[in-house]
Image (cartoon, rainbow, N blue to C red; front, side, top):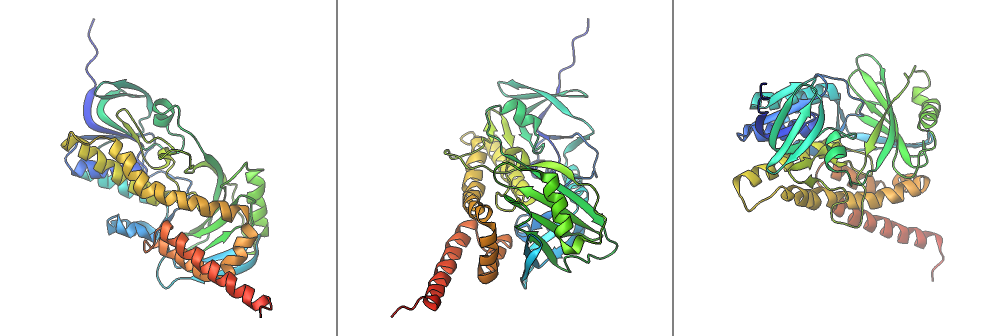
Length: 398
C-alpha cells in the first residue's frame, strides 16, 4: 500500500482572489514569499458590484489600475424618493467607477507576475489546524501553509470554518445593470445619483460606467421589508430610468462592519489564519464602500505577515491591531454618522441641501484629504454654527 504524498507547502496560502486576496498575494510574492492563491472561479469573471472606488485609492495603489477605470466622478446628485433633487460637485475627482471583472483580473495578473502561484477554478473545502500552520483541502488536492489568508468574500468558508464565533452583520443588496451604448447619459457626465428616500434604512444609487449604468439598493439598518419591492419602486419612481428596460436585479449580502463593545468587533486573526476584505466585514457602514478597504486590508495583512516572518517578536496579531488603529477607528465614526442618516433620512437630505459644506467635507474624505474623525468634528461645527444663525434669523432676540 502506497503512502499518500506529503502536501506541497507554502509560506502563505490565500483563499479568494478579489481585491483583498490579490493585493495580499502581490505584496507577499514580490517580497520573496512562496504564495499559493486559490480562486474558485476563472478570471476575468463577472462580479455583482456597484464598482465605486473612492479616489483616495490613488494614495495606496499603483496607478496602473487606471487602465480599467470606466468613469471618473466629480459630483453626486441627491434625491429623496425621486424628488427634491440637488447636485453637489467638486473641482477634483471624488470616485472612480470600475467593472469588477476587469479590475480584479488586473490585480490577479499583477500577483501572478510577481511570483504568486495562482490556481483558478479550485475551491477550498476544508481546513485542518496544525501546530505550525494550516492544512487546506480543496476539490483538487491538499496543501500546507504557515499562514492562511481568508479573502473569500462575504460568505467566506475560511471564516465559517476557522472563526465560528464571529459576529455577522450581512445586509441585503440588489443590483442590476443597463447597457446604454458608448457614453453615460444619466445621471450625467461625471455624476452619480444617491436616493436616501428609496428605502427606510438605506439608499438607492445609479453609478455610471463606460457603456452601462449600475443600479442598486441596499439596507444598512434593521430588517429589510422587501428588497425586491424597494428596487422596483426606485426604478419606477426615478424619472431618469422611466424609459429604460431594467433587467431583474441580482442579490448579494453586504458584509458591513458592526461596532461592538470590544476593540475588534469581528475577530480577524485566529491561530495562523487572517481575514481580509469582505471576509473580515471590512465594509464602510455609511455608504458601503468595500473595494478601497479590501485593497488596504490586503496590504496591511501582507505587511504583518512579513513582519512575523522576519522578526520573532512580532505576531499575526499585529494585523488586527493595525486594522483597529487605521480602519476600525474610521468605521466607528462612520457608524455614528450612518445611525443619524438612516434614522432621519429626510431631515438629513434637507440638511445636506442647506449645508452643502458638509458634503464637500465628505468629498475630502473620499479624496483622502480628511479622515472620518476630522470630518465629523468639522461637520458638527458647521451644523452648529448654521443652526445658531438660523435661530437668530427666526427668533426675535432682543
